[in-house]
Every structure is written in C-alpha cells, then in structure tokens.
Length: 143
Image (cartoon, rainbow, N blue to C red; front, side, top):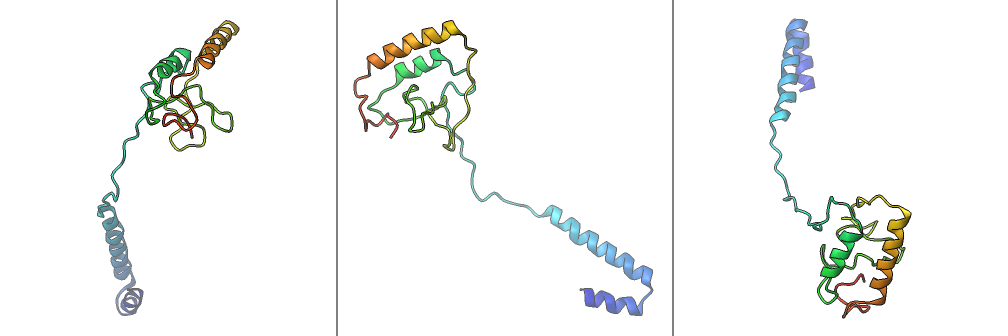
C-alpha cells in the first residue's frame, strides 16, 4: 500500500494524493469501530450470604450460628461464623476468609466496652456448647 501510494505521488499532484491517503486512513480507522465483539464466556452470578452488604454484628453472626448445620456442606449461609482460619482471621458474611477470591470486607458495627463485654459472654456460651456434629472433618466446617 505504501509503495503504491509512493508511486502515485510521483505521477500525480501532491495535494490530491495526500487527500486520498487521508480519506483511506480515515476509512480504515473508522471501520474498526464497527467490528462487533462477541463475549466468549457468559458471566456467572456470584452467590453471597443473606447478610451481604449489611452490618456483620453479633446478631447476624448468632443468626448464622443458629442456622448452621455442621453435617451439611459448607455454603454461603451454612458456616460457623466464629471459626478462624489457620492465620487467625475471621470470615466475612458469606464464610470466606481474607485471601480467598470471593472475600468481601464486611461492614463492622460500632463498638464500645459494654458491647465487647456482652459479646465476650455470648462467645463463652457458644464455645461451651458446641453443636452436635461439630467435629474436625465435618462437611460444614472449614477444612
């Protein structure tokens, strides 16, 4: 294309050749704008807990705890919200831990000393009364 244009430049007036080159460049450049791109994969919808986007406070954790069945497979609404991973991190509202692909930093409640003491009492009750089936290797536990 360049060779053909350069040969024409020598035989025809310069302004005509330049205007043709500009028109050709404009046509080639604008043709790319009409190239349709079709998606190669369909987007998958991600599933999150019923507490996604809400405050992850002790009431929400206790609700998930009361619904948790250690003998059923772990899912976004079936997990122990008080369980820690090997790094000591707490999970988000869907049971995912920092570093996992679906982890979302939860909205945390405002905290004060009295609320911390109440949570400490609730945690003592939870720890002293494990759920039936809450044993290492249970399907609903972190592996």
